[in-house]
Amino acid sequence: MRHFLSIQDRTKEELLHLLRLSRELKAVYKTHGRDTCLAGKVLAMLFEKTSLRTRISFEVAMADLGGHAIYLKPEDIGIIGRREPAKDMARVLSRYVDGLMARTFAHETIVELARYASVPVINALSDWSHPCQAMADMLTIQEHCERLEGLKLAYIGDGNNVARSLALACGKLGLALVIASPPGYELDEPSLATANNDGDGSARQVTDPAEAVVEADIIYTDTWVSMGQEEEKQQRIRDFQGYQVNAGLLAKAPSRAKVMHCLPAYRGMEITDDVAESEQSIIFDQAENRLHFQRALLKELMS
Ligand code: CP
Ligand code: NVA
Image: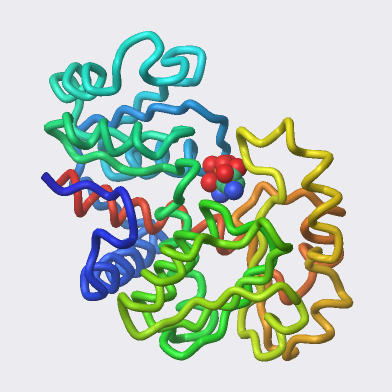
């Protein structure tokens, strides 16, 4: 059974294949062609947390490929394991549908679903990682920079789920990532080590945002307060002062640098409105590519 739980689970060639397939399917989509490889197939989407992009892009992707998606919101499933164990949900749903995707708090919940499911399981974000986002990001970078290998990416902010998947994708696909975070919010050492030892790319942690952006082709940021961290909000806002992607920081980077954000963006916090709206920003191409990467992923896993 093939799942998509982490960037780490795939070889470089497999990731490049998914990116190629994304570009092919995007070209079909842009010329109003249709690929109905998932006709009659159903995807169940389990959400413990809210979503705009992930929910809609998966739902549209399933419809576009001829299949159907069923959205189970947090009120329907609660925290998985409280009403019934993940292992039961996985086995019951496997009798009804052809694929599962899940957005959870604990990463272990997704792993447990995959362990017991007899259909493919997709990680749609956990507290640990966000691999679909990282792959859509790689697709966007490829489109804007015409390559991946050798590019320099600066990630400014929290060493969180998005940063981790980005680091693993950079490691596999040959990009050099520099992460700038305040003390206490760095990406963990084992994830950095994996990114450095699992391909031609690299990932390095620094504290100074200016040092991170100095040669950057891409400047990336994410919220300071991820879903589930709402109680830490005020402390985090204090701790992340100086880690905003703003015009001052952009001035320290090469003028070619593009700005990325997985969204939702909190303007005035991790990014300023003028930077998010600037010519250098590619955040909406990035959001669109969630759809195109996921069409490729669903086709690969479920057709
Ligand atoms: N980037 C992302 O995953 O957005 P949503 O939380 O809206 O799905
Ligand atoms: N790090 C953020 C990403 C949202 C898409 C979160 O987990 O809330």
